[in-house]
Structure formats: structure tokens, C-alpha cells
Length: 501
Image 1 (cartoon, rainbow, N blue to C red):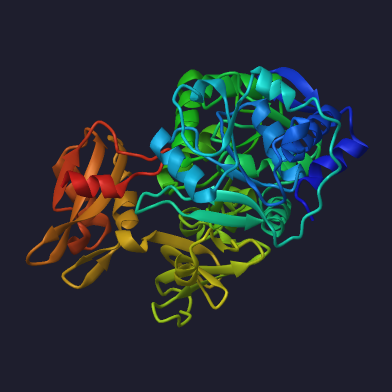
Image 2 (image 1 turned 180 degrees about the vertical axis):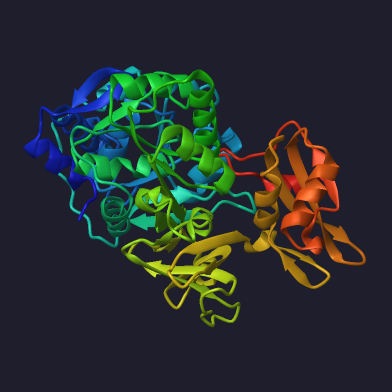
């Protein structure tokens, strides 16, 4: 089944339902959205001699676009045509974009005007929105939905490449349908009165949630700024209402801080799904205190996007549970269409309470890496995706992540998980952010060093650690910095911190 059938279905039964919004202004109904995507699909597949681009089933089309209604038209138009979409983070450097285009063999590159300043060489066609070439895409008669098999690649997503060359993750139509089903069963219910706002990049998790909201005939809101602005989002929540969004933990923290500082009314927010990095317990407690029970955590990665575990709002709302603190520090339990386990390096499954590699299998796990069979074989073993994360399961099935396997610090033969130390340091009121890494040491192998954003006295941080964790886990050095280095999705770059030392 072609995932774009979700748009065709909704447009058929609710053609006049409002669909696309630029800020508070409605710019398309579902009927118009589907018609424009179908016309775009027709032009992409039409022969060159007939004014089209001559693409055939499975050809790749890259979207290097900032958040806009045109992004959603293009996304569904590419899929409607039976082609493969290559979503590219709009914050990448042009050299990084050139690598993605070359590696994927993209035949067409679509850009928004703000990203069209520099040339990107290659055999691809380039189309910029808000130009005559873009307008011409919609001049052909609508193309009937092109049918695809569930195993066909729909979404070719390139990993962030923080530890090496980015790899293309092949997500199939079946993968995306499974992810969409999991949203309804494990994350949130949706109806036509709801709205999703795209404050995070649509090339990543925020864009993936478009499918569930299309299926439910909900509204799709692109902020006038095109991105994340806490004041703008608060205003939209009041004017649009029933607003849901996907946000990285750093975004949640900024939104909560804004509401706490200004007294803005959070009642217009329905659901905030957070993921993509660790949400520390102190930050989550403050978020729930300030905004109420509106939060759902998901854990996923590019190879199994948004769908490994979920921590539902009902769990966060249960303040009487005897293990509430442990559950808030977890990433929840396995979503409906996956199995999650913890393994030793030799593949042996570990019992509850033991720490090991987090593995997952199910219909939402990627088909593999694009043209990289060896990397695929290293990552998917006997049907299980090895996530690269380290964690433990409790007897109730809740998964607590310790760290990425490459970030574990081994000092004097003992494993130290940076997140455990970070959680303690963040309890100090003068610590805004912190990241812990290992520094090579000739005697101990590695020693713990903490990079701190804030003004907490080191002796107070030492005392906090000595009161809460084993002495050998205490940082041997504190580096105070103005900001932590982060990638385009807000994840702290521990590789950069290691370079600093």
C-alpha cells in the first residue's frame, strides 16, 4: 500500500476539511492538497518531451526545504507518484547536501528560496518553490495514485553522521504505516478538531507525524516563522486550539521556561511529544508542573523512527505510583508493533535489571541502509536492530537508557554511564545544562569530566555527587562553558567535547 493513500482517502471523504495553515491562515483544504500533490506527481512522471521530468517508479526526489505548506505538498506528491522521498535537514551545509544527493542518486532536488543561494552540482534537476518552475509542476492533470508494495522504499533518511559518513536509512511504506498505527495505539488519539504544528524540522520526526494527522483529517499548521518560537507557539495554541507538536527536549525546556516566565496560558496545547535526546527528570518534573499532563515521551531512531518505546501521559500523570521516579527517568515500554530486549555483546538476552545493548525488532524497523549491505549486517542481526544504546529493562517492561554504547566511560575497570552523573548534577539550581564524557587517563583508562552551563560552585557539585552516587563516578574536573555543542537536531555532540579535551 502506498502511504500517500492516506491523503487520497481523507480527501475523498472530507474534501472541504481545512488541511494546511500558514500561521493562522488556511491555505488549502484536503481536497485541494490532494489535487495539487496528484498534479505534481503527474509532472514528475510525465516524459521530458511532454514537459515532465521522466521519473520512474522508485526514483529519488530530495527535499531540501524549510518548513512550509509546500513541503507537505511535495512530500505527498513524490510518494503519490510512486517515487522515494529523500528528506534533507535544511540546516546542513551545501557540501553535506551534495553528499546526500550523490549517495542517493536523487534525480530531482526541491528547495525553498531561502536555501537556493548556493549551487549544488550534479545530474539532478533543481526546482525552487515560489518560482515559475514550481508553479509549472501543478499544470498537468492529476495522476491516479501509483500503487506500491509494502516492502518498497518510501522514505530515504540520512543519519546525522556525528560519528562518520551519514548512511541512508531505507524506510518502506509498511514501516511508515506501522509507525502511523503506533501513534494512535501508543502516543495519542487524533480527530479533525486537532492540529499539529511543525516547529521542529519536517525532514525528521515532526514530518513523520504528518501521516497520522492526515489519516485523522486533522489540521497541519506551519508557524509563520517556519520554526520554533515559544511566544509564537503559545499564541498559535490559543488561536488555533488543540495543538499538538513533536519537540526535542531542548525545545520543551525553552517552551516551559517561556510559559513560566510570562504566565502564558498553556491550555491550547493538547499534546507535546518529546524525544530525540535525553529528557532529564528535573526538566520533566518542571514541564509537568508548569504545563500539566500534556506530555508523551517516545524513543526511536532513524532506523526505527519514533516507534521503539513510549512513556504515555497516563504514566506521567500517576503521581501515586511507588516507582514514579524511576518511570519518569525511563523512556517507557515497548510500542505495540515491536519487541524490545537488552542483550549482552554476544547476543545473549539479559534478564530484567541487567544493563546491556538495547535491541528491537518488528515491522517498523528499517529495511536496511542504502547500498551498504555490510553496515546493514552489522546493525540488523537475526532480525534484531542493534540500536547502539545501552539500557536496562525492569520487571514491568520499562526501559531506562544509560547512554550510547560509545559514550560509556570505563574507569579502573568499572563502567560509568554519563547520564547517571548528569542527572545528579542537574539537581543543582545553578546548573542549566551539563554533559559528561570520559578523558583518557594513563592510570585509570578514563576519568570523568563534566562540561557545565551554569554558575554552580565546583565544591557544591562535588558534594552533590558524593551524596548521591559512588565516589568513583564523581567528575574529576568541571569545565564551565557558555553553551554545549549540538547538532542540527539539538543533540549534544560528545565527539566535539572530546575534541575540546
